[in-house]
Length: 358
Image (tube, rainbow, N blue to C red; front, side):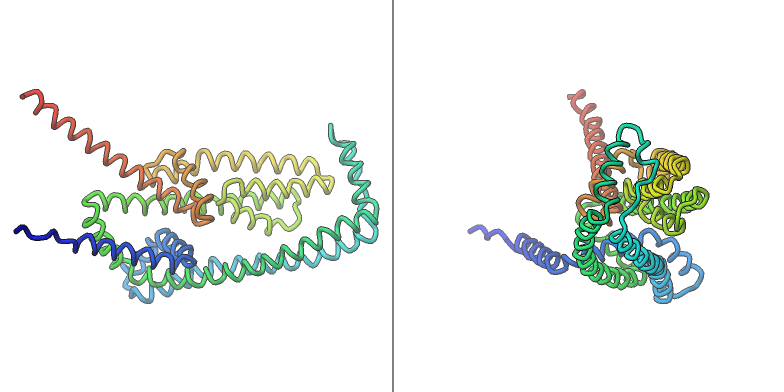
C-alpha cells in the first residue's frame, strides 16, 4: 500500500499566509509609519554607519539619529505653523475690513489684454461693492471654518503617524544589521541568489530618489528664496520654505512661485511678477530635466521615464510616501525582468550548440 502524500508543507504555507494577511490587516493604519521609517532609515543609513565606525554604540547612535530626524521634521513644521498663525490673524482683520468697505478696483486690472473688461466687471460686482463683498466673504468664511475643522482632525492623525515613525526608526537604526541579515537569508531561501541584487537595487533606488527629490527641492527653496527677496515678495522666508517642502512633489514648486508672482502682480509689480515666474520656470525645468535624472538615474540604473512613472504612480497609490516607494517597486520589477531576460538568453545559447550537435 502506497503511503499517503504529506500535506504538511501546503498546510504550513496556508497557515503562514493566513497569519501574514491578518497581521497586515491589523497593522494597516500603521503601515504608512513603517514605510516612512524604512525610507528615512535607508536615506540616512550612511550616517549611522559612520557613527558606529567611530566607536558609538548602536543604541546611542540610534537615539542620536532619531532625535536629529525628529528635529529636522518637527522644528520646521512648528516654525511654519507659528508663521501661518500670525498671517491668519492679519488675514482675518483684512477680511473684516473688506466686508465693511469693499476692495477698490486696481487700475491695472482693466488694462489686462482680452480679459481686462470681464475681470474689472467681476471685481466691481463682487468685491468693490461692500454688500456683495460681505456676502461673498461670508460664504468663504463659513467654508473655511469647516475646512479648518477637518484639518485639525487630520493633523492629529499625522501626529500619531509621526510618533510611530520615529519609534520604528529608532529600532531600525538599532537592529538594522540583524534585520538585513535575516532578510538576506529569507530572500535566498525564497528567491535564490537574485534576491540580494533585488534588495540592493531597491535600497539604492530609495536613496537616489531621496537625494533627487528632497535635496534638489531644498536647493530650489534656497535659490527661489533669494529670488523672492530680490523681487520684493512679502514674507520671502515663508515662501522659500514652502517652495523647498513642496518642490519634492511634482508641480509643487510652480504652485508656490506662481502664487508669489500673482501677489506681486496684484500689488502692481507686474514686471517683478513676470520675471519671478520666468526665473522659477527655467529653474524648475533645469532641475527636473537635467539635475534630478542624473542623481536618480545614476543611483537606480533606471531610465528617468520609469523613475517619473514610479513617482507619479506611487504618489497616486500610496500618498506622499509613494514618492519613494514607487521608484523602488519599479526598480524591483525591472531587475526581475533583466534577470529573466539574461536567463532566457543564457538558456538559448546553451541549447543552441546542443541542438546543432544532435
